[in-house]
Length: 126
Image (tube, rainbow, N blue to C red; front, side, top):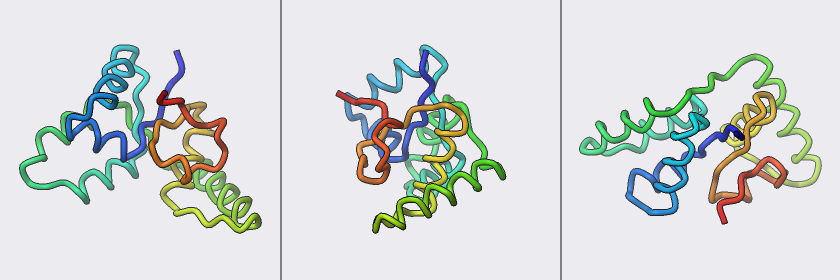
C-alpha cells in the first residue's frame, strides 16, 4: 500500500473534525501508511491552542514521523532551485516535505496543491 506524508492542512482538518480528513486518516492508519514530517509536527505545535493539546498529541503519535536528513535537505535545495528558475518561489518547509516524499517514496496528501508544483507526488483526495 502507498505510504503518504500528511501535510499540516490535512492534519488540522482532521483535528477540526472535517469528514474527508477523518476518512483519509482512518484509512491510512488502518494500513500503517500515515507519515508526518517532523516539520509538520512543529507546525501543529506552533498553531495549537491549549485545549487542543491532547488531540494534537494523539494525532501525532498515531503517525510515523519522518526526520529531516542530510539527503532530504540536499533534495529540498534542488527542488527549491529548480522551481525558482521557473519563477516559482516555494517555502523551505514545503520543499523539505516534498523532498521527504521523493526520498522516502511517499505521496503527499494536501489541499494546498499549489505548494507542490510536481503533481505526480500528490495523493488524489477526490
